Image (cartoon, rainbow, N blue to C red; front, top):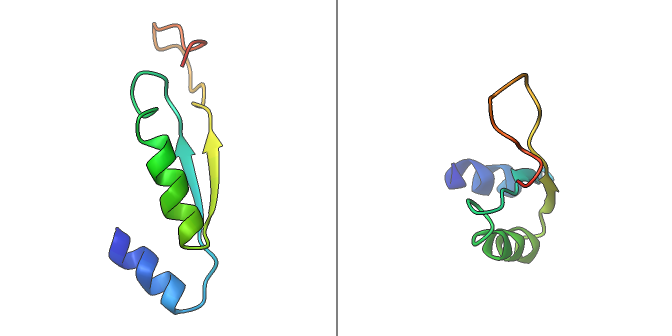
Length: 62
């Protein structure tokens, strides 16, 4: 995956990354991802989970 990002940047394409931030799952990685994206001139948007129907779990705390 990183090779594709490198190739796209080398070709002059703007890179926009969407990442799901999940409490208790990805929260320890968020700062590294922000640093990675911004030091390489990429846009980063942290998004919430998408409700795709009933999962049997309460997702409000994610």
